[in-house]
Image (cartoon, rainbow, N blue to C red):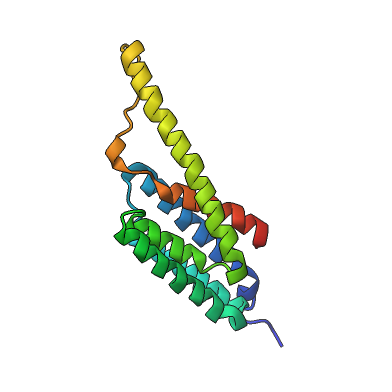
Length: 169
């Protein structure tokens, strides 16, 4: 029997899904960095890629991956209402949680938190650098960091996802 035109799909599907997901994660991080927004389309692409990947290659674990999503989304809504995280950040983290099993979720969340701490330190360093340059080197143009703009937590989320993905996938 001759192989059909889509016979190699099963070989290419995981690669395609992972590349599309990586592109959406990078796009989400970059738009958060430059515009402080994570577009819903990026979140949706991540979620669709994750569910499709799990449905095709880990079907028996799909419910566990979905439970991760609902758990993270539920906790995220509470953090959003307390103004700890932005809505886009919550959706982004919840969509990325779909890629992990429950026993991997803790590592993902902890890595994102650590990356967020590093990002916060860098953010504060830039604020301090701006103030010092403004006071002591007024002729030097240093980009201003707006204190009320918020941190681009999508960057920390994307880096945390990449680090944990390299470990578990």
